[in-house]
Image 1 (cartoon, rainbow over the protein chains, first blue to last red):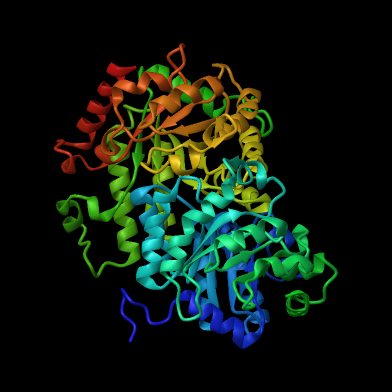
Image 2: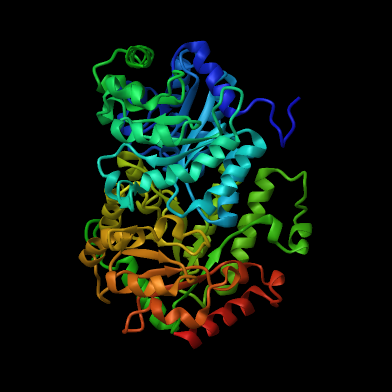
Length: 298
Length: 298
């Protein structure tokens, strides 16, 4: 019963079904950086100073596939970070495409962390690149809002047309996030102004579970802000990075959820991708520990 | 005499030398979209509904190369827009790489319009992707500042190390730019706060001609704001899009320049890329008209 203009099953509905089935709001980031990979992994593939971009990109895909293999039955979605793939140009993007295809075949939803934003026809081209059928199609992508509300609309239109999701950066997890996002503009913070921009789109696209297609990135490092944003964006799913390696405290996670126990997905990248750097045993063990930690908190 | 940490000739110095040699601050955007290309161009290449991504990406490169051929002796730099290439995935990025290589061989500086922005190690990965030697290396790139001042620093570090340039979106050319950028935060606008973030980096990297490596995107559609930003960023080069197709008025361009007649580059994309849609004869004629129009105004 799916048609292009009225997708029967939207990203938000599918995501929440998966979260319920797994009793976990956790997702895993895919941040493949050669400099963090285990020496054995690189040695087996002969990766060294003389390796070509193609060889490095191949290692990126293989490491990403090993993450997918380790977590595909544990989480609803994976979140590849575009920057790490772009670093190796066209072969890097080919590795991203392979990773997306591999994760999709394993039944995972794919959320591309690309933080795109541009004006008019350029925004439409980015939306076509990542949200239209064909090409490097993912289920949802992250966006950056500095250019203004009109620049988000081509993305939101693509989301509505294809049942895709977008997560707009509202309050990010970095230490300096507040340098713009927390500026006070006559009683509201800049991040609250952005939240208010999204709210109508989120409400308009609310699906079976009451959540819309337009979510918000809200860092785990700022639970106070999350509380304020939660009430402004009742129908938006929050994408919550910053747990673990970045210092976000899992005990404060409840502020990111609604009373229905839904409304947020919690993402871990480095601690799960590189357990050997954080005293862990394996990617799967690190993912299981992350999931237990979040379950205990929420 | 160039060393990685002290490039003998920085982007800003080279750009201003080129501007002086040509007596023109104009640059040309490269925005290759199949739907705007002349029917003849597409027919000759057999591009139609059934074309593969590879075939479409090939047409993107060929159209981009024709723009470079038409303008390489007229302008200091070209500005490829990443979105249009990303639209075709890995083959699209390969076409972007070919375009960058082609334009470089013709002696042009290359400014990638990608509006990237991310936190910490992801920002460093984007900087490595586009500003480090090797890979898809360009001379300068555009950035989006919403995530905060700390997220710009990895890019600025790469600029200083390699003598590259960055243009941070301060006031963009779109109708809704003000929805965030013009919010008043205790006597300054948000765009002025961003300008004040950049100023120390711009001053610190000032080269032979007095201009630093960190510039600002300031749309041609907002000359009043440009005047205010000009005095806050005396050592930043402004990248000025929005002339022509977007409605920016060339007679107001003087506000974007310093008293030394320098300090801005004016970019035209659509009117030069697709003269057949704007009553023009050829790309070269459209570029010459654009250059004369700007010369008359400045």
